Length: 82
Image (cartoon, rainbow, N blue to C red; front, side, top):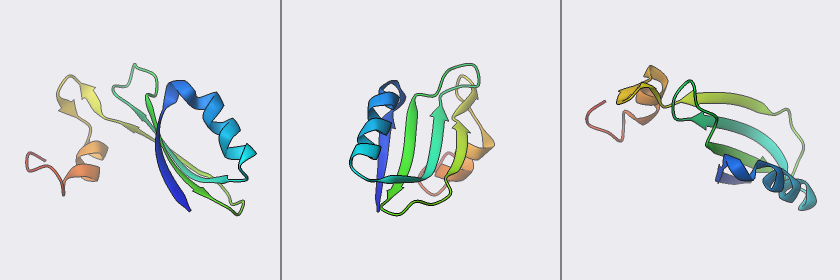
């Protein structure tokens, strides 16, 4: 197994590389900075055995410096402000 954080703008080459190296996607978290912006990061978990893929999304801010509850929950152990 392997986990990656990857810039979204390289999506096509990334998934080609995954397939050509006989890896399979297990989980994918698509991250966007705000609700109206496109995804900018993919957090991926890969495996050597095919499985059902679990897809999810995360938005970091609802407005400038207004973090979403999901983002706060995810990082509360790392940031004192949350």
